[in-house]
Every structure is written in C-alpha cells, then in structure tokens.
Length: 355
Image (cartoon, rainbow, N blue to C red; front, side):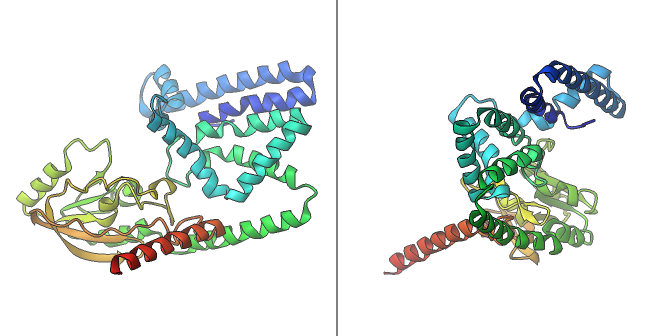
C-alpha cells in the first residue's frame, strides 16, 4: 500500500517487467495494479476527508491534486520550460554526481543498441523522475524520485559490470563526495540554532524566510512574518510600519534578506536556492534602517538585524553561499574544480581593476 500518489507513475514500469518476463501474466498484473490504485486512492482520500472534515470526493481530489502538485509548471513559455528542466535535472546532478549520470547515459545508449527490451524497462523506470522532481519539497530535494534513483543505479551498474577499474574509481569518487556530506549531519543545523536563539528574543515582530517556518513557527514569543509566503495577507511594509508605530521591537533575519537564495534544508543548502540569478526578494523594497543585532553563525549567514526606523539605507551585505561547504555536493571534485575556476576569475578581475 502506498500513500504518495506520484507512485502511480511507476505503474508502466511494473507492467513492462512482467510483459518481458512472462507476457501471459501481463493482463492479470495490470488488473491487480488498477485495483490496488483504486483501493489506495479511495482509502487515502477517505483519511484526508476525515482529517480535514470535508466530503469524500473533495478528500480524494485533495489527495491526488493537493497544493504540492500545483507548482508543476504549465509549459507555456521558455522560462517555464527552463524551470521544468532545472527542477528535473538539478537534484540528479546533486544527488547522483555528474560521472554517474554520464555513465548512465552511456549505458542507455549501449542498451538501445544491444538489448531493446532492457532499454524499454530502464526507460520507464527512470522517466517519471522528470515529473516527480517538480513536486516542491525542500527536505532533500529529489527524494520523491527515489524509485527512479534505484533505476539509475541499476543502469549505471549494467555498464560497469565487467569494468573493474572504472568501478573502483567510481566508488572512490562517490565516497569522496558522500562521506563529508554525511559528516554535516553531525554539525549544528542553521535553522535549529536560530530557533534556540529566538526563543529568548524580545517579544515583537520577527521577519524570516518561508523555508524556516517548520523550525521557527511557535518558538518565537511574538509575531512571525514569513517572506515569500503566499499565506501572508498583509504587505511586509505595512506589517513593519505597524510594528514600529506600536513601539514593539522589529527583527529581520539575514535569511529573510537573502530569500530566495542561500536557504537551508536541514544542515544542507537547498539546491534550488544557489543560482543567485536575480536580486533578493526584499532588495529595493525595504526602506528601513537596519542595525546588526546578533550573529548566530556568520559563515552560515544566520544573523539577526533590528529594524530601527523608516529611512532609506544601504541593503545589508549578504554573502553568496553557492560555494559554501554546507552544499551537499561541496566536496564533489568536479564542483571543486568549478569553484577554483570561479575564484580565479574573481581574483583576475580584481587585479585588472587595481591595475
């Protein structure tokens, strides 16, 4: 029994395995899958309806087409096509490494040439990830496509079956990437460190990033406004002005000032927040004087500012964390080479300016 409706997308994979192993049982297995899906949808829809106190049909609709799925883009422009591709591929590059993806592509090409049946099964095994990775969830981006991850591992392993040296090199590469990432799990989690601090912060108004909501909501003694949060009905400026007029302390975190970039998912930087392609959400729309109030973790960009008054002032310096050690793929040798090249460009441009 499954609870995530996206698992339905892997039904063709199950059918294809049976079809190529025992064609006579294809119809029987297909019927079993359809019945399982219908029963699962009904039971989960009933549980959702019962929990939210809504009609059964509304519960089924909520289960199948909940708000998490509403972010799947309508491919109607170049920008949405770009975002669709980015959401699909970025978690793969981050979670699987470029060498694994490259070998997977080589393996698929070889399968297409040598074994069309295996190629077909492998393709329907991994293709659902293109859609599933659109399901927004900052908790380990790409985790909803974990079934396809097993498919990628199988396809890659098929190519390496008789290549012992290449297999050894790839295993060493993965260990170099993975072990330091696992070590981060023993390090302080940025938003939890912030949580400890704000519990004793003077009661007033706190402005934070929407990604910190699970760790912050309910812990700050005052009111919390989450940036980039659709549920916030009042404008930020109106909320701040109201706080200042009421003479209550108004605080804003560096994560709110950095939103939508340099945000965290557990101890790791959220992969989709590292492009720094556009300006910060609040830059240009925050006409207030800010004073640094507390530094919780400078390297992680966890700083609290106090809004003193309404006045035009310089936007705080927000660090770019795209090459920060809290990236889950920071120790990937290919990434390290990229970081080195980027630093070299910066140093070269600075020397040209000085010269």
